[in-house]
Length: 573
Ligand code: SRM
Ligand code: SF4
Image (cartoon, rainbow, N blue to C red; front, side, top):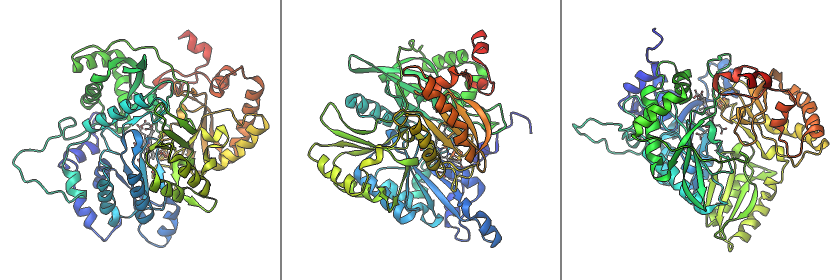
C-alpha cells in the first residue's frame, strides 16, 4: 500500500451512509454480544465503544465462551454542567443498566461501563429524554467542549459556558443517523442528498478537542487540546480569547514519531468571532490532516509537519482576516479548588474530590447514594471538572444547611480533606474495561498514593500540592505528560516515570526512568521527595525543582519530547 493511501477508517466512514453502516442490523442480532468490526468504528461517533471485561478473558477462553462483551457509553456534557434531574437519570441508568458506577471523565463527561448490547439502544434513548446526548462524544469529530467550571467569577463563567455550548452545537454532526438508530426517528425519504456541512462524508482525519480556560486557573488543561481558548478579562469584562492550536497527549509506545505536544498560542480573537474561528480550524484540519496514518492524524502533526507559520497563514486565509496579537496572561495551576466557596451573587459551590472520577458506593463511603439524595433536593446544578471531580454548584443560602446535613449523613463531608498530593491526582480508567490498557491505573493509583502519603507526611509536605497522574498506556487520557509526576503503563505492573511537568499545565514532563515495577515506585520517588523538602526554594514547585536539580531536562516542543536535552544544550539551540 502506498504511504499516502487512505487508512481503512476512511473508507468505513465514506461508505457508511453518514454513520449508519449496519448498526441497526448489528444491534438486532441476538446471537452475539458484539457488533461487526466496521460498526464498532462507526459506533464511536454515536458515543459508545465495544469493550470486554479483561479480568474475565482467560477464564472465558478456557470455557470456550465468547468474550464478556459490553459497551461503554459516553455522555457529552459541554462545559460539564448537568441539572439535578439529569444527574438522577444518570444515576438510574448506572444502577439499572450499567455497572453501578458513574465515571466522571477527564473531559467533563459522564461514562457508563458494562452496558450489554440489548440495553444499548434504550440507554441512549433515555439519555436523550433528559436533554443530553452521546453523539460526537467519541469518533473523528469535535468532542465534548470543555470549559472552566470554576464559579469564582460567575458572570465570566456563564459567558464561557454559553460559548462552549454554542461551539459544541455548531460542530455537532448533522447526520440523521443518530435519531434513526437510537431514537426511532423517522427515516426521511427524500431525493435530496444528505450533507454534513462542516465535516463532509469522511468527517475529520481523527478526533478533535476544544477547551476554554479562564485564567489564572488552567483546570481544563487547555494546552492539551487541538484548539484552546484562553479567556482575556479586562476591567471585569470578557473581551476575547488568546487562541492556541495543536495540543495533544497521545503517543504510541516505541514510536518516536508520536509524541505529546503543547498547543501554541497564535493570537487573539474577540468573543464574537470565536465560533467562526473554531469552525475554520476544524476545516483546516479536515482539509490538511493526514488521512493515511491514524497515528499521525491529529492537528498537532499537521502543524508540526507544515510549520506554525504555514498554519497561521492558512488560518488567516480561511478566516479572511488576521488574528490580533495574543494578550499577556498567566496561569497559576491546573488543579481544582476544593471546599465551599461563595460567588459574587451569594450562591454557594462545593468542589468535592472524587477518586479516579468513579462515583460508587462502598460501605465506608456511600458516595453514589449520597449524591442521589442531594440531587433530589438540590436547587442548583452539578458541574463536572476536567480533574474528574464534581462541584455541587449554585446552592442557595437557604438550601445549604440541608445539603450539608446530607453530606454529613453520607460521610461525604471529608472528601476534600485529603493530602494535597491525592487532591491533585488523576488516573485514567485502564483495566478492566479499556482495551488499550497495558497496566492498571484507576485501580492502582489510590494504593500508591497511600504509600506516598507516608513519605510526604514524613517530610512535612502533606499540604503541598504536587500534581501526580497515572495512565495505563501512553495514550495519555489522564494527561500524565502535564503532571509534575506522571506514571505511564508500559506492561502489566510496570510504568515509565515522567517528571518535571509544569504545575499550571504549561510545560511537558520528561522521561525519568523506564519500566519501573509498581513496587519500585515508592523507593524511586522517596529520595526525590526528601531532597525537594530539604532543598527547595521558597514557593518552588516540585516539577520546577526536578529540572533545577538536574533530574530531568526542561522540555521543548513536539518531537523533542523524546530527546533528553539538558538545560545547557537547550540554551544553546
Ligand atoms: Fe482517552 C482512547 C478513556 C480522555 C487520549 N480513551 C480512549 C479509550 C476510548 C480506549 C479505546 O480507544 O478503546 C478509553 C476508554 C476507557 C474506558 O474503559 O472507559 C479512553 N479518555 C478516556 C477517559 C474516560 C479517561 C478518564 O479516566 O477520564 C477520558 C474521556 C474523556 C471524554 O469525556 O471525552 C479520556 N483521552 C482523554 C484525554 C484527555 C483530554 O482529552 O484532555 C486524552 C489526551 C488528549 C489527547 O486527545 O491527545 C486522551 N484516548 C486518548 C487516545 C490518544 C489519542 C492520540 O491522539 O493519540 C486514545 C487512543 C486513540 O484515540 O486511538 C484514547
Ligand atoms: Fe485506556 Fe490508555 Fe486511555 Fe488509560 S490512557 S484509558 S489505558 S487508552
